[in-house]
Length: 228
Image (cartoon, rainbow, N blue to C red; front, side, top):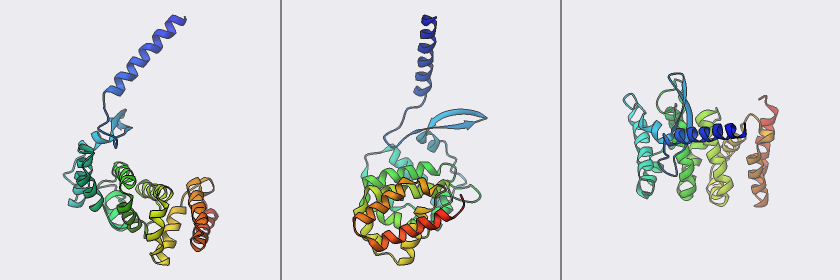
């Protein structure tokens, strides 16, 4: 019986290795995901999904975002291409929605997480440049899951990992923009168990940013009063 079980496990591992060998990650920005094709769940890579994207019906702006992302995937060490991706990314929330979070699910909505995942990677590689992009996108932002949730995650991680780079330009924003960003960051379904927001509060407190700490704290309390 033990021998039989060992054979089964061995064959299972071979099968798994064969499945995982079907798709190789393109580079450090690539990742795997499962999705459905003709009612069958299959595993593929971000890069493969980008290659398979039908761009015929996309707007010129979406085509440019798509091409810029592919360029970085295909040339991951090319700084010029990575900066081009950052510089040509949507600069405001309205444009962001029109590309990644449309009500009709068109443009780049279906695979928006791939484009935003690359932005997240580059925000750590080029934090001095991405901070202004993130603030511009978030000053009018409103959480609505999907792409907006990804944007929230990117900004949250950026603040935690690059707080000193974030706080200076953030303090130069208007009080209205600051408040909206604090609300955007606090707007999650389970704010009570949202440790990242508490980390931001602690960072503000440690840096003696009393007014901003109170602003973020009020945003958290207001969100906790709302229903999930």
